[in-house]
Image 1: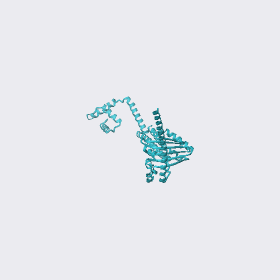
Image 2: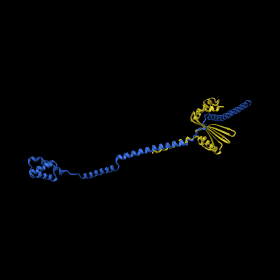
Image 3: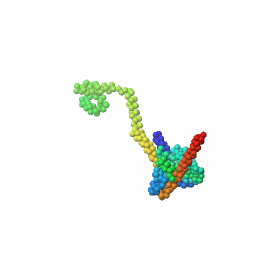
Image 4: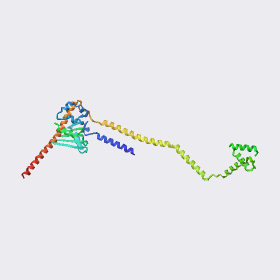
Length: 156
Length: 178
């Protein structure tokens, strides 16, 4: 009897493991009508040191040092936009995500969401730009801090 | 019975080779005839044997007890032959071991399948850029875009603050005049 419980527990653990494996961006990686830009941590490590240092007010080096990946999804396909909006609604309901900021400017809606890894570490920043003819989602994953967000805000 | 025959039978008796008839013959001899003095010891032995033979009685229930004991022994023997004790213990241990190894194998198979499926499901793409310089420029562009949108929110908050301050100022002035 105990053996059955053990096997059921393992199956459930594996199911939750699979359920958590995908993020918002992962779903749209291979979708038609969605343009994807993916920059990995390995690539960020290869950024030219001199350029990073001379990037002026934008402290790229400081910001990317805590990043694991950058993903940009762009679509003007109406079906994909509908699907994305549906998933964003799910994110709003998700207790793991917090709304960082909402900006409304004419026809453009910009929402920022964060997912905390721990009280001081931000595991994910999601920026959703909803324009009349286009939808852009930018996802940063890594171990970011409030200082990184501040640095982004103060960059020129 | 003459002396020679008597001596021969006695010798045979003490060697344990006499038949029941010969023993009865000796018993009759020692019971009935006048016995020479040197055979007196033998006579006492035979008479005591005869006395004990007649006195020993087999209890009636002994037969039943013996029969029960034999039946029990036979039943135990039959059980041992059909399912030996050692075999049943070994079989039980084998069953337990089999269940344990089956569970372990199932878990390993599940883990193996899971990892394989996870690798297959890993849709993380390859880097869009192969040139770090291009990737860097794109990163800078993305960060600027994000920064611009964040600042737009910040400006809106700042504008709201300014307007709020203006409203407060007007209200204060109005209160002072009144």
